[in-house]
Amino acid sequence: MARDTTTSLHPKAGLVLSLNALYNVAEALCSVFVGVYFYVNSLDFRVVCLHYATLYAVTPVVFLLAGWYAKTRDRVHVFRIGLVLHAAYYGALLWLQEDSADHAVALGVLLGVTWGFFWAGNNTFTFDYSTLERRDYFLGMLSTVSAVARLAGPLIAGLIIGLAPHAETGYRAVFTLALLLYLAAIAASMRIPHDGVRRPFHPRPAFFPPSGDWRLVMAASATLAGSFHILQFVLAVILFLRTGSEISVGGFASAQGLIGVAAAWLVGRTVTVHTRKPFMLAGTLVMVAAGCLVAWRLDLVTLVLFGFLRSVSEPLFGIPHTGIRFDVMSRTAAPGDRIEYLAAWELPLAAGRLFTMTLVVLLYTFFGETGLRAAIALVSLYRVGTYLLLRRVSIVARPELLEERARG
Image 1: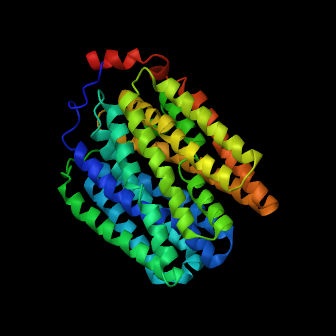
Image 2: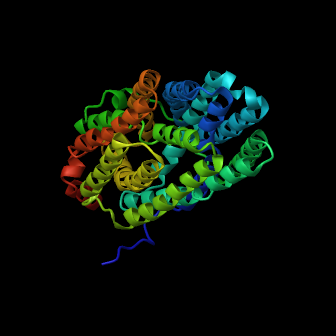
Image 3: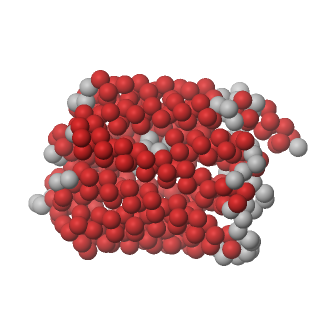
């Protein structure tokens, strides 16, 4: 029987979806090409890695500070500051131009501060505006909207850069367009209602939880490192090295987006609390298959196949995983303490990212492209560890616990 998808969504869910669409359009235009831009201007893959390692180190610290401000002052300010800083980041790239690679660390710090504020606000809204009864459906909608927003952006950006008289002119045009989209998102964020209620900030229970379920979710966070972001820029740089064409990088990212839209829509329409575990298992197997493909051989064909398989795996695993994380937070956190748990989850994620980034740099330094192949395969295998941890969470092993709470 078809599920009712018209009720039980939060009244502000549409606004969250719209803001995420604007954010993802802007990011789709630029995020794939930032790593390529640093590489073009430095001809050193390690400069790219240094930029992102700095980003990963700064983000959780700022996320914690932003979480404190959101709790004790206003969450809307935190979200809006994140949007403003995104605009400032791309403004800095426009100002520095070819010298950006010389300031990779400073720009990584700026982007880390940006991510800390933005994701503290955005994750809070996503949690608050997804109801328990419709959480998987809402997360599926959010994933689909994000994928649609990212669909054409990379190809458009690649065409702008590739067809410009000079590549630098194309990069400036793309960064300018992203800057304008962030300004539009800042204007749209004015519709978010302020939450002026000031509450004390209590992070200790989130960092040292009595709940075994939350400890499992925290441990799983460290194993997520790499699959959501590191692989994206590594693949973009490898493809650019193979083809020397920004158009091919953009087309590759957009094609992945098309697969992601279809997969996210299907998963969002079909996954339930009872089917989260088999969906995550399917996502794990697809990701492992993709990693084995690259370990066997790395050429344009296997690179494209890896990207497509990864695009299928992400919603298969990511949508139920996010639902589990939010449901465990709902069961564990005291009312009003969700931001502390969101901030705590970022720390093991950052630790895993820094470990993975160090591994990527070392493998690349000593083994070149063979090392990158090994790194991609290892990051793909992380997903097995994530699945084994999450399948032990009580609401995954016994999903009827959520139904009992909903009835209660």
